Every structure is written in structure tokens, then in C-alpha cells.
Length: 364
Image 1 (cartoon, rainbow, N blue to C red):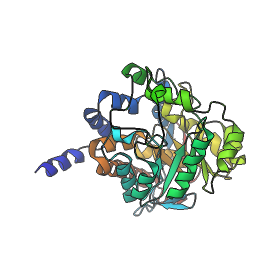
Image 2 (cartoon, rainbow, N blue to C red):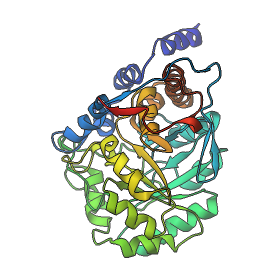
Image 3 (cartoon, rainbow, N blue to C red):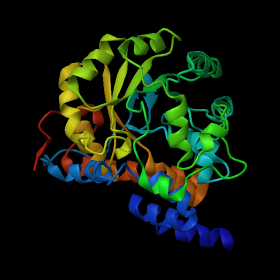
């Protein structure tokens, strides 16, 4: 009976917003605020979501959409849908199984899981649980030996790519975390890293860690150095400028992710859906382009694909699913977005993501 009740309650969660509301009831205030927060006044956070309303889909009528094909590939990896799992920290704040549940859900859905440096499960254990493709997200630390060691560990563990985040020389000021004095509860650690008491000063644990450990002097030469550390393809995350995208590709990036860190860094940053077309045009097919930020509906995914993204990444929706029902919750959130995308494609007269053409999406 309990299982049936749980299933019935889950089935009433029909949108990502429904999952967020349910997750908020299950999470501590500190954990929910950490996941939900943006920087400063959270304008970039709101802008990311609101900006999708600036675009409309010029649907095509009388097209055979009796079958829709969502399969695609990213850097030669076949995926069942063009929705990847973005790197987010501290999954055990949401569920005891943490990143292991997320990895298993990604495999069920046939998509890529990007594992955060700031995971609460060692990267090797996540890799062992992941029967599907996986990338490792990397920050460059002042301790270059530590950075090199993370890349080497990821390659040895069987990861398929390195996602270098370049928009975080310091942490954006997240007022919710500062006010809550955010720290990890007893028993949880940044499992891939060593921390000390300096990282547990007043204020936010993560802000102090970034301030003490991150390399604020990182330049394009450093990107080339990261590229030299392994044979894995390098994906550069945190690009909004077209000229930066070109420089990333020139430095050896196989792909770029148009991202403003979910509105958690520079609060005056542009919405990523606005930045996407310029990056796609500048890269000109020399590398794959993905985007994240503000995606809450399958139609948002379709708009991004129509504007040139090969795939999108979602972060917070995954955490809401994880908080609600662990692995099954993540599977369901991905399934919701998949179903919404498939329906949007049908209504737009697009039978396959491979048949998306310029002109389907314009400014409203």
C-alpha cells in the first residue's frame, strides 16, 4: 500500500515545477536554498528562464509525425535524447544515494551524466555505477598537481570527456548561502578533494573553498595545459561570448557549453538562450555547441536545438527529481522533458532532431 501511495503521489507531479515544489518540502532550507540560489539579486537566474519567452516556434503543418526520433550523438557518443545531465555539486544533500542514483538514472535514459568535481561521492565510485557515458567536470586549482591528478583519475576511471568550467575564478555572491552559513552536514564531504579548517570559516563553505583553492590567474594558456593532460576530449563550459568560443576551439576544445553557471556567477550575465546563436555562428561547425540555463520545458529544449545547440544540459530539475524519489525521480524528470520535447516536435512538424532547420524559431 505504501509503495502504491508513493507511486500515486509521484504520478501527480506533471512538470518540472511540480517536482521543485515537492523537493522543497523534502529538503532542508539550507539544501534547497543552495540548489535554488542565484548570485546577488538573482536577476540572471530569472533571466535565463524568462528569455525562452522571447522566442516562438513557427510550426509546420501537415507533416508525418507519427514517429519522432530524438536520438542524436555528442562527441561521437550515441544518446537517446538531446538532454544531458549538467554537473551539480553535493547530490547527497538531496538523497542518500547521491551521485550514484544520478549515474544510474542517466544510464536508464541513455544519456550523458556530467559528474562534478564537488561531488559527495568519489569519482571512481560514480564511474563504477555508471553503465552509460559520463564526463568529468573540472575546476583548475592553484595546486596544479591536484588538478592534474583529478584529470588522470577521471581518465583511469573510464570517463569519456573532461568538462572544464571557466566562469568561476571566484564564486558569485550567493546571498542565501551566506545568510544560511552554508556548509555540508556531518558525514558529507567533497569526496574528490581534501579540505581543511580554512574552508570552514564564517559564511559559505563553498565560497571559502573557491577563494582559498581556485586559480584566479587561469588564462587561455591554462586551457591548453588542461588539454595536454589527457587524451579525452575537452569540453569548455561557461562561454557566452562568440570570440571566447572561437578561442576555446582554437585552444583544442572539442565542444563548448554556452552557460552562465545557472545564474550563479555574474548576475548581469546575458541569458544563455540569447547568447547561443552568436556562439553557434562563430564556431561555424568546428566544434559542437551545447547550452544550459533556464530549461524547464521540452519546448525550451526544442528552441535551443532550433537555434543551433546539438544538445542541452539540465541541472536543477535533476536535483528536484533526486530529492523527491532518488534514481526513479531523476528518471521521471528526464522522461517528462523527453515527452514534452517529443510532443513539441510533433506539434511543430519536426519528426526528427536531425531534421531541424534554421527558421523554425525566431524572436517573438
